[in-house]
Length: 275
Image (cartoon, rainbow, N blue to C red; front, side, top):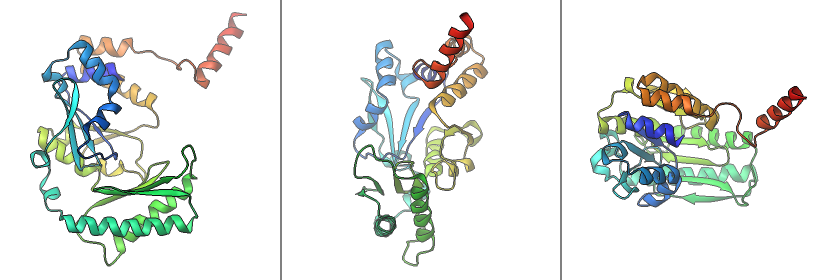
């Protein structure tokens, strides 16, 4: 994926990761997530013109980070990129919504007798298993997320005008202020990119996911795993038409990855065929 992303950046295309993970004032947390990309840029001494095309939107829409000199990351001041809608949100209304979400999240988890711990952030509140490695049933997480969606949309004390995203993260449940649509739209305005020039790849387009609202501001591709993401990146590279991009797409390994179940099956087939 790193090689494909680098080739897209070199081709003049902006690449942005839009994630629910919100770490305000902690660019190193995001840098750790992109360690492979940053290391490769440093090895190749990638130019500023190229690495400045990479962004990360954190907390759905609440924080923006970019690569800076030295191949580390920095947070972009909010006033430089936030949209008019985001400027209209009052801190007291955000706090009220999160408090209401916190109370009802705890009630929903208690109803299911879930062994979870809760975390309140600046613009999010969520829960996750107390014991690492323990998975909560997907259907249970769905019920908690749907309960929160309904309560926060209909509760008489919920502040008006504060959009939110209550979603099942597959291992946890979170309520974030704003959503990916708002984050993508703000980034489009910041970069001067049209909606018709934007493609969003995501894996959570269900009603309890956090990708579905991106449909209104970008073309979307629903992927289910990293391999499918790689396959679509290959398509993008091939469609660019440049020799470098086509060469990058053609050089990418195909077939099942070594060590996977599919790879083991392929070894058996090859062995039986050879004998």
